[in-house]
Image 1 (cartoon, rainbow, N blue to C red):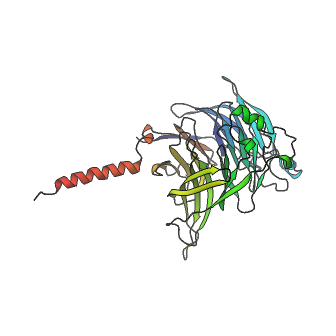
Image 2: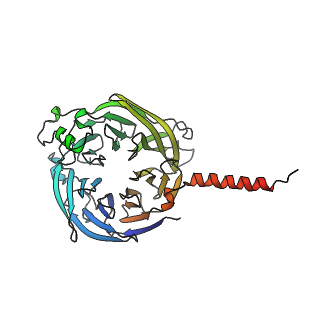
Image 3: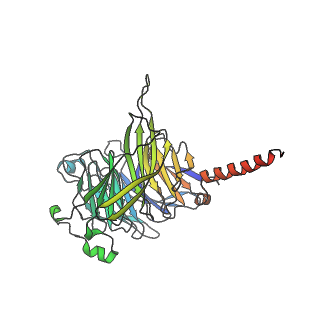
Length: 412
């Protein structure tokens, strides 16, 4: 069964982030950023119909000179989002960047965005830095927000810090993923595994809420520390030649099997003689991980697959854990089987520019991509994706062909 997909043009709305707050309600963040293009920075709410049509329900226009929403995480139960929005340049220069913001999307017939709170997490001094990641824990107790070299773990309810910030000395921060006991931070040079302090570990929402220091005025030095217990370097992949530059780009734990970790690496091949530019590739890696105790964490590479002849720009794992989706710098969109890493879908020109936002809906029946080409593409996931992967189908076909050929051999 072929996947059905539809593109929707949204004039003057380059998209940088998105999140679902229900199975059919999508929040998208975008705009002209800090440029003087005249394109306003906004949050917009859309409803997606059964036939993949897009209905605009509400919007929230940000203040003049504020940046576009560059990252976003949504919570289904509360219909809230946290997103990264830099304050106006005048405030940045004063060290007053309230970059982490929380909104409630309320209403039944008439929807509206209601600001719930803000939190500054980026150290002052670099007006070009921004909140590039917003990642919610599975129980919605915490949200990890990160800039180029700094990650802060916040209480999702109050946006107050619950641990000391992580400062990365090498590489850039690109992604993070949370389990009940660990935080895995993807930087460009390696994966950093941190153990959560005992006071923050999942023990039920009621107990956990009581354990969190939920005070905006709590001194940072009095907060518990996220302890680094493991560093995972880029593994050896036989098909990647010596001399290639390899960087991590994304990392996600499986939504129901925390012993499975997926990561993405981008590869820049050695430039060939007389070539103007170096060729690029992207790989998805599947790890088997184990955390036997507080200070014990192991990871073994279980599989890998080259997914493109270009760099990956975004990545997502479906909530049911069956699919992996990715966007590539060549404007293509793809889906893999999460178990076998076999390709299931490829849309060669999903957008006119690289994909900047990618998200499955809660039921894993839709995949939405957004780009700076001011468009959203909605992909309906076929039911057959939940069955046999293409690799298994091919093996079955080869077996049948073998039986047919065997029957054609003359008997002596």
